[in-house]
Image (cartoon, rainbow, N blue to C red; front, side, top):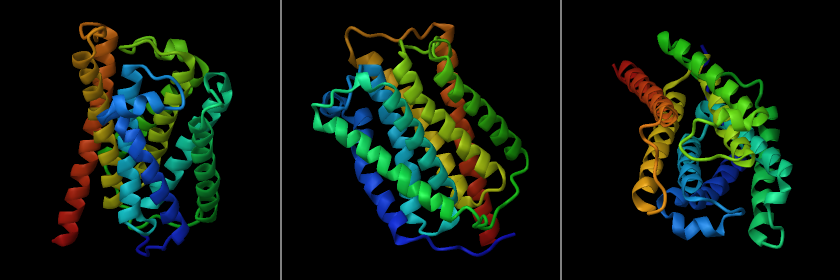
Length: 273
């Protein structure tokens, strides 16, 4: 069992600090959609606006945990996740360049703020690839749940890329291929996180992944409800089987997140005792 805590380069924290500042705009899609939505690099509809806001809120949890815990304890999880997310989003954006108006400065900024972290954090991930986990703890039955979660999320993320219409047919609102492939980053990133922690997670990793999942699961469901209540010409088909599956799926993500947080608190009490 590894007990050392390798210290990260200050540039890693600087990069995550920059990402946190950028994420403020992303989280605002959930909290203040009318303020940020019209200024987004591409046209967003109400459901997509709130959904993306919840995704960025979950990402903010991971980024803040990385800034608070300065060593490899959390970065072992969040650096691979960050690289995965930015790589998939950048790839989907490049595949749909026709959706962007390059006469708008925000579009150029979009590609800059996704390309640079991908390259910089990817380089650090390579540099740190041999670093051991910090105080990994056996997770028992939670390991099986995380492995199943990783498999399901990875499979669904790939489906969103290769068969976007089929993969998103049950969603509560219509999803085009561009958005389905953008959203695939969320699921593939979640799979990476679950896979890493399943190998043995310390309490900081459990809190980070668990907190992200709780915010994501509850945030997207809340975002759906907010659009249903606030948009006069839009309504959610709550009675639809597809909507119920969608809500239950994100509810399960939040539930697993809660279990991870509970295990982290249990580990803390055990250490304290």
